[in-house]
Amino acid sequence: MGFPHPTHPKENPVLSKHFGDAEARSFDGWMKRGGYEGLRKVLRMTPEAVVEEIKTSGLRGRGGAGFPTGLKWSLMPKADGRPHYLVCNADESEPGTFKDREIMRWTPHQLIEGCAIAAYAIGAERCYIYIRGEFTDPLKIMQQAIDEATAKGAIGSNAFGSGKRIEMIIHRGAGAYICGEETAMLNSIEGKRGNPRIKPPYPAQAGVFGMPTTINNVETLAAVPHIVMRGGEWYKGLSLSNPKSTGTKLISVCGHIQRPGNYEVTMGTPMKELIYDMCGGMRRGRTLKAVIPGGSSVPIMNAAEAEDCLLDYEGVVAKGSMLGSAGMIVMDDTTDMVYQIWRLARFYAHESCAQCTQCREGTAWSVRILERILAGKGKQEHFQLLLDLSDNMTGKTICVLSDSCAAPIVSGIQKFRHEFEAYIQGAREPAMAAV
Amino acid sequence: MSRDAGKRGSGEAGQQTAPVHGSAHGGHGTETGPYVPVFVGPARAALEELFTRYPTKPACLLPALWMVQEARGWISEPAIGEVAEVLGLTPAYVKGVVTFYTMYHTHPVGRHFIQVCTTSPCNICGAEDVMKALVRETGCGELGATSPDGRFTVIEVECLGACGFATPILIDDDFIESVTPDKVPGILQRYK
Image (cartoon, rainbow over all chains, first blue to last red; front, side, top):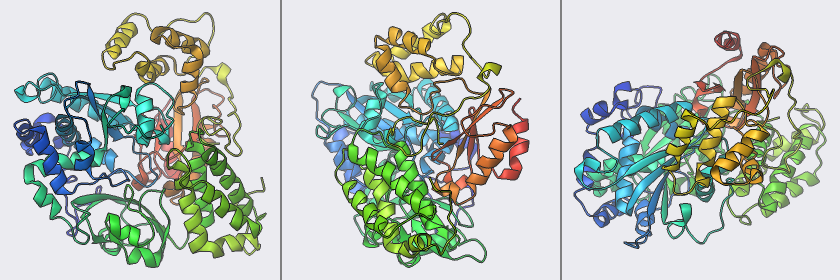
């Protein structure tokens, strides 16, 4: 549902069905709503059969990369005698994205059940749920739910009497966007600085504590109980456009929109329907200028691209951007694109872990150049300088943080060059004092 | 400017160590007298319980630092030494981790610590006005500073992950959504 708004007829609420329903937070409340049926069913299946079901569903990672979940699980070694770990990525920090927060706030047992099923499928007895430090409410609610599920015997040393040990431990982050990158997250759990690791080895071979590890996003895991109960074929059928994008997707919509919120739509739903029908369109008297569709780390779309875009992995790529984590930032005609691109660059400069030179220097210098332009001190050669910097920041570092900084800068210059020109030529009042 | 200035991205433009005003007025946990260890009594028991949650002792570092901050309000040099000792790490290692994560305070802060999000999604919805209202109404004067009465410290932070509820602020552990400048005085009244 378009929480905090009532469900729109064009939505397809599966994961978000009980958002806003405080009773669904308790163990008993969740059981009344059909909860833990999926886990009980899975405990009677072989782990291989569970992985197959998820493969059939076509479920892909909802954290941003869109990697097939069943395939990821199948990469875990079989019966190798080492401890296996599941890590749930609840470090949701991508600007524009606020879906995992609602899943944890309203349906903590949905996530716990998904984690338990995934842990069983990959042969893990322990799951670390990495929740960002600022999420004070989800931290409390999740801890309560884990305690309750353990006390009721759904998880713990003997999950539903199956003899299987499935423990869940919350690891609280402490304010670092980069820890949402999966290998940085593993370091953070190990008590280290959150620097991303060079791959290979991949986490399935040597993850947290050097052991085989699978890392999945909250929304991915929350979809798992539904797939187990209703079948992979059912989930695969939820696709309006490209058969490679299946299921429903929670789209967080924010910015200059009438009804910001989380909307759950079938993959392939037109973005136009989401913006104008479900979200009620732009603010009164305003028109759409730009959309950043996948959290702030993806190229900016102009209005024409957005209005012609289908919301699935391939549909957004076809319009020159990426679905990412589906945090949609909607901007109307009042938006100063140069200022907002600067603000995003500042975000990445602040969040760079600083281990790769291209990122540490590139993000910081991008900020400085954009500040010069905004202060009315820009020059024509700054365009090429920003593009050269962005080129050096793309595909050349351990993780993709600096690529993410370059994406809005490059697409911003391509699509809104006239706004940069206005500052450079003095046609627009400087937005800040000279540095 | 943002968060604890100078952390992590060392090449970041325009970042200087945040000014700290009024630390003599208290906030909480300003150091006076000899260091009193954190991990004694019930806190020691909690630490022992923590050891069962991870296969290695160093992995307990982040939660142990949270325990210190909850007890003392910030993480001082002697506290870094104590954490290093109980986890079998060096103080330099612990300091490296403390300074990486922006939510750990390396200096005393006001009794109530306010974090306001000004990243793009909130920025286009007026977050900078909320930030200015907070700085003005708390009497902090500038970001990163503590009000002269020791009551508040305000910092600007990056995305709090509640973009559809612009502008979110975090006061201590209270996550407050949809804040506008006119709501600021009423919200602050709840924090003495």
